[in-house]
Amino acid sequence: MPDSRHPAPLQAADRLIGFNPFRVMTVLERAKALERQGRSIIHLEVGEPDFVTAEPIVEAGRAALASGHTAYTPAAGLPQLREAIAGHYLAQHGLDIPEHRIFVTPGASGALSLLAQMLLNPGDAVLMTDPGYPCNRNYVRLAGAEPILVPVTARDNYQLTPDLLTQHATASCRSVWLASPSNPTGTVLDLPALQGIHAWCRSRGCHLLVDEIYHGLDYVGGLPSALQLGDDVLVVNSFSKYFGMTGWRLGWFVVPESLVGVSNILAQNLFIAASSVAQYAALRAFDGDTRDIFEARRREFAARRDYLTRVLRELGFVVPVSAQGAFYLYAGIEAFSDDSEQFCRILLEDFGVAATPGTDFGEFESRRHVRFAFTTGMGQLEQAAERLRAAVERGAFTA
Ligand SMILES: Cc1ncc(COP(=O)(O)O)c(C=O)c1O
Image (cartoon, rainbow, N blue to C red; front, side, top):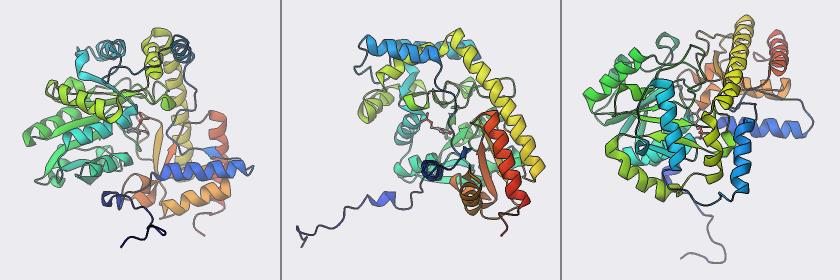
């Protein structure tokens, strides 16, 4: 009999057993706690640009509030924003994507969680890279499906290939999820590489979902969109990274024609609509003067990437490929430690540099890797370099 005076503590659902925390958030919380104690901390952990949102967007947000644009929008997003996103594909890639295939969401996170519910049946399997963006595994698990983590190395530019897919596919594979540029390695897929994976997916009857959240932030002179491959590809994107709007919580996805109806129903049910103020603000994100601001920031990220890659290599970290996009370096720490969590703990607690252990991104060689985000200014990066040098010279990680 349940005892009403001493009720048992509430338990979460069984399917959450084994869910891993997003460790970078734990590192961030600890770093903030140390800062509150007066410690100086350099943040190389969090995947968030240090620039505040560009002024034209902020101004458009203020104007939206002043005009009372605070009501729900259609579930699929403001028509004029969907039109602006379609215009973006035309301008950047020469692609004519009908607006009704574009859905505006609360961040790429909203898009990925919706798509997992939409695409996967219990028991299905999804192929993805290890290392890769950690939340994807959990979206897949929440849909009752199973992530298959495919170990990727510098040899394959830390990306999937048709050979790797064939090696790891099982009979229940339904979907391949990729990110280009990727988190945590910053590597990209060129058009032939995307085409090879797309052909593999078609031959196996699998969906191909490509996360393009870091598009715009590349250092290789532009990237193909997976939408160039055909109308059967699913693409996710966001205003968080290149457009510098993390806290506004705004993203989008593009689906094939056959999934438009169900996307609308899921968007209505899961979140009614994305933030209206954020959507009105984002209308300014594609204008020429705003893009100039983003391009200046991209050049700044490129300079930081060059600096940090050089410093890490000089200190003995293994960085076989520098970031081709995004703002991360995935560095091998084998010269110092075989425990990335302990390495990050010592680096934070004793030297005031916050970084993310490889164990956040998968299992494959994750104890021998650390992700450094160059989302902080050059002055801070120089200080981080000094602290790293001091740690390495003192043999702090081998003790
Ligand atoms: C690869 C990737 N996808 C999706 C997201 C989620 O982004 P948001 O929900 O802020 O758009 C992130 C955030 O870091 C990411 O790195």
